[in-house]
Figure (cartoon, rainbow, N blue to C red):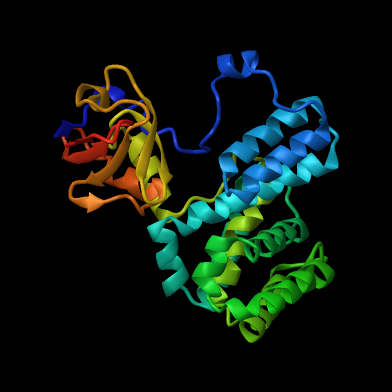
Length: 318
């Protein structure tokens, strides 16, 4: 039994991009590549394995040495889009939006998000640019296994998926958009196309434009799902705290502990790096996403949580 303590509120969970190294490690580590082409191959290997955090980190490191390499820049953007897609689809509040939101509601949401950017963001972002990033997000999502499995389970549609992706590039990529009414018309036609060719729900299309359009902003600005917004707000207000761990989901094994903070409730309870949490308060977490498991491990000060885990020698603990 663990009791969550206020003293670790500043740490919470370090979940944003798995695989990042601390500055000291970054300064001393030698790159495992010597040319831009070699770095690209290694990063693409990470992408093939869907290790998006590792791919993003490698692209960032390589671009420090080869800042003008177009293939590395595109690879970095591609990995970030795929990482964002899979994080969204692992979020229960996003899944609710996907299930319960209709075309008109999401078109209104698209308008609201873009107006907020125009009002709050320091730099001007044209509607054409915002739409282009949404098109790119949908284009890449149609190649993402998590997106396809959720939205297009029919394996016989692969040829049509390729055709739709080609249409996105040839007819919609960087298509000039003069105003909100034209954007709604274009998005409506895209919904019709995707429903006709792929039986893809309007919500799956439009949410890529709502969230993906925000990729037009800097890398530190994102649109949060309802659950992530509530978590962030609770953290800022000092209401929500965590056990003091850095973890990453590994399908079938549970939450791999990458780090356990010294003096944290997790360390006091016996958790150590390389352990795997398998059960949280009676919930089997071996098939949960990192985000969903994190929600079960956070609460107000004094909250108790019961865990089961396995150590590297396969011994079980609780």
